[in-house]
Amino acid sequence: MTKAVRHISLSGVPGRSQRAAFAALLAATAAAGIAASLIVSTASFALPRYDGLWSVSVVTEKGDCDPGYRYPVRITNGTLSNAGDANFTVSGRVGNTGAITVTVSAAGKSATGSGRLAGDAGMGSWTGGACSGRWTAERRGS
Image (tube, rainbow, N blue to C red):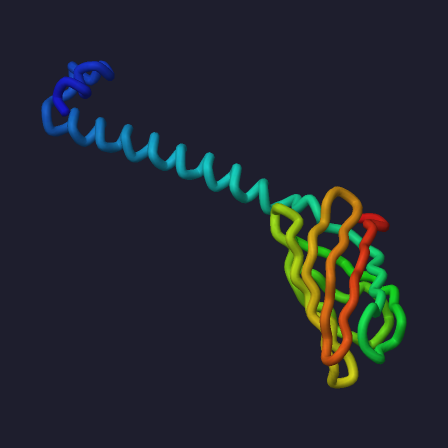
């Protein structure tokens, strides 16, 4: 430790003060590194690539459910929510890779879906009760 202190030119400072000055320098350097990494990681979450307004088309392929729906969905910080006036609940998440999981519920019934978003489009599958099918999505705005 003494050699390192001599290399940073604290030679005019008494021994105990040198150690304290060196410890303060190390702490300041570590704090700056931690702060820089927090800023970088916070910035990566501040602007998720899939945030915005999406139009989702749901098509029934199996079962006695309505043949299709179109839902407006908003993604904010990777979290899905209903963006329309219809009385239904949308919950789910989209990850950094575009992998998405979603649950849509209304009138005591629910369906779950999964799939992937890429750029301004997405697709996947869903199942709910005795019905199942596919969904597609396209981004409509921010």
